[in-house]
Image 1 (cartoon, rainbow, N blue to C red):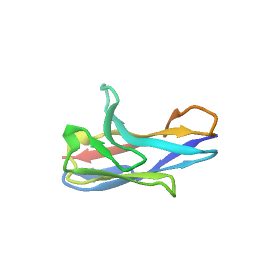
Image 2 (image 1 turned 30 degrees about the vertical axis):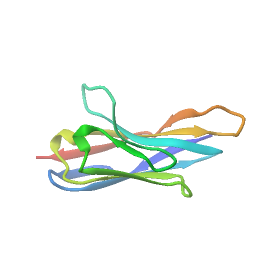
Image 3 (image 1 turned 180 degrees about the horizontal axis):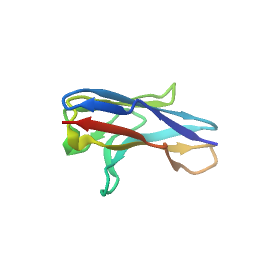
Length: 121
């Protein structure tokens, strides 16, 4: 059974920083792309940042220059460093990973349980 567990959410003042991390565990043959999504109340879930297994990154325009995604393939972790946080960054943040549990099985999308990030003005 594959599991993604997130750490690091919380309450921070505008202009502050938070670091989110996500660890994958269980029966895993390989991990392709990993990413962070967020969902604010009344809004659709949106991609915040993604990173391929080779380290190529992609960011939503709203977070470019403020957030940095990174991963450690050996530890099966992905992190999101969030700087210069704004109230509009308030949301539940979810980790997602494209994981192949076994060599002969297709790749599936797995999601973490979500972690709340609240930025006060």
